[in-house]
Length: 366
Image 1 (cartoon, rainbow, N blue to C red):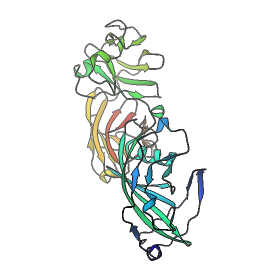
Image 2 (tube, one colour):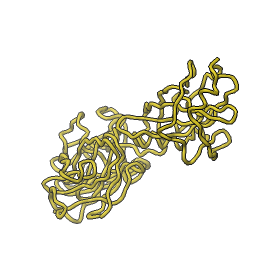
Image 3 (cartoon, rainbow, N blue to C red):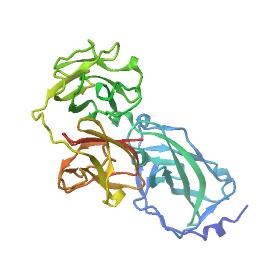
Image 4 (cartoon, helix red, strand yellow):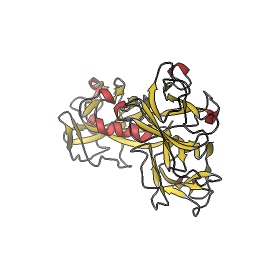
């Protein structure tokens, strides 16, 4: 068997230990010296554990891989290590692991949310497994292969996406152009001028284009100021005053809706709304598409974490919205007019929606 003492000479390191729970230890500054040597041992590889649904995880740590430790040289023990996790359009993330393949639940959840957002969809993330092997007080860094993690963020912490379909976009069951703006996990709104017939139905993100699952009024064509939402044989909801500016508020906990007429029926018109920020060196505008009066959308990919604002007519002096929010924490919010602070957005691809009357925005991660 290969002499581990020779292998250990490549990478000595000290370990400062802290705890996540009784079965998991991490450290605040994991070793990431770019000059450290990484050893590969024959037949020593990690095998990925079962897919992880974080809504079903109740402990502080979770098993992410198992090891064929029988292939280790005699007298070698495994200590703490790390996962180097990569995902499309996201920066590499380091997550600490114990020698028996357990990772801190919160760290692992943060990694998938940072890369993809909180939508409870199973995501695949590639992770290189690096472990510290100990013998006679010396340590070497050993690569135990690369695993493909299957991770699903918590549905209980996610605010669902809802779209409206109706006269505003010609009842198209293909174009997801009008997304509601969340106020909370259960309440969402849409503010616009309700042109034409002023009617609509609602689809959640998992049932888009399925008419049998559309959400609407108990009576087709109901134009009352408020009413109940139904999910079976739903009829169209109609604005109480066609052609006027109203906010439609829907509450999916009480399954009800309310129309509120805007006091200002002549809001300022803009020729265009665009995104501008670090992703384009604050030079030029990523122009959004008008979808309904005063509502805009764009599909944008950010190669790296960025900061940005919404801007009207390509001119800071006309109007702009920022506010210091972080899309990594919550994918929706309300921009503050002329705020000196920017909106922070993690790397990734997003369907972006913006309302220039209310300042509401959504960054729906793809």
